[in-house]
Length: 615
Image 1 (cartoon, rainbow, N blue to C red):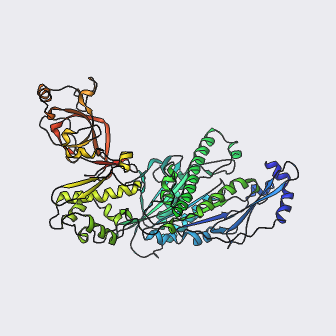
Image 2 (image 1 turned 180 degrees about the vertical axis):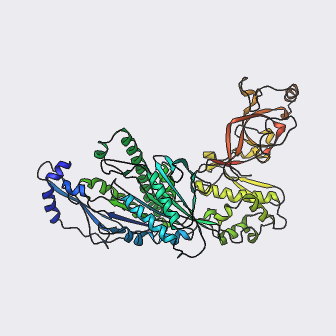
Image 3 (image 1 turned 90 degrees about the vertical axis):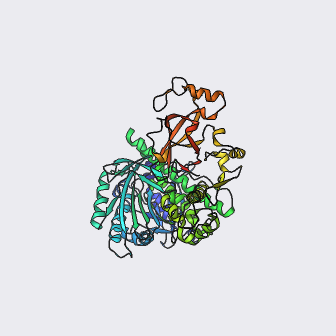
């Protein structure tokens, strides 16, 4: 193909001179929260020496339209010119400097993130199209601007820089130590294991950037002698001590995609790396498509399509860009880097095609107001109104519980602080405070899953709570909760309706050794099966046979006393976050019914993979 293009380069130039562009009506992006731009880099010396002409021709920069011309080898005649045009919000030609791009695109992200928003810049395109060159200089300009002291208010700035290769992630500021990309219970992506470095001045920030660059994985490829073989993500966290909140700025240099003809000349290692890169970029494209379809379906009230942002580590980090249920205010800048050589028209078209797709998303304009079923989106006024109507009898004072907090800030409040604020209202008991906290968390979990829960928790006066069961909701279909699906069973004592999957709390028993080593506040177990159902050679956690029993226990069972029943149980252990638990299925114990205190209802949160207590 390259030979054909070079042999017909003169004809190509003649055809391009005679091309008359079709007028393209000027359209503006329907979302104010995303700016999609394209940067056309100059032809490199290798292309010029080889004889490849330029195939990318920006029109007037104010229109945002760029023409790409390709030469088609027609089987029945001489080659013909095939032309395509693409439109972006802002277009930068080969004469534009990175400093001009920074002033035009990025500088507005700084005050936005300084005041608590999430700003994201990512550059993508073919290998050798100038992504790393662009992002590296922007990082330096951000460091200069953030540390000038021109932004109002006191802030603390932290920096983390990671490297993504396929679904593996590494900390570039900690000698490439492996880390994990996880979601917390608020749906926020966390870089678990990555070390945050506090930044004191511009020199500190630049030192961290240079240090990370030295650990980033690069290798020679067909298109680039120092190609980035991974995605580099620089996260700057801006902490506001006055409001106890964070703003985030992500600067992302994506690894370059490569065409099949480029891959053909690589060895096994380059082939494997290229495959991982192209898979993650393919998921990114699927997320772009899904986001566009989601925004269109919001207008027509159709069912929203699935957006697979959990399918790769890259799109997990970019979750806030694509997730239609994102609760944080986000602004995104996309720089599509384009190689102008005629030999690379295919990759250049793909880059601009997906830039156009991302450009038409309408996430901001479709939102008519905060979702009243999503506590993370509530203002302080909405939160206070909900508290006064839903906190039981006596009503918990909204002013004492949430004097200034938004819904998100109240959810982040530790359970002890939440309950102590509730108890300041006269007549409120610890049980009512705990039940009310469970109620707002239940609502939050439901909003994260996008459905209504099986159970509605109702706070009552005194030391009791009630639960209203709604059959046929998502809980009955997906079993996110440990609650019994039979609504009539709740009227029986829990000892008479023990079943596999039930969660119970334990009380200390004089003859028990199996739970002594568990912390007092985490003595909860999940019922697996009656102990006699386990094989005779299976031992529990203390080393006892699971189906052995004393004569006293046998006598109790013969006379129908349920206290003699024994069950093989799995332990629930504390998670890494507050009020979260993990199921340790391999840590088992045989528990007598008379050691069980009460049933505990837990819910599973798929985002964090933790269990949370509901009642």
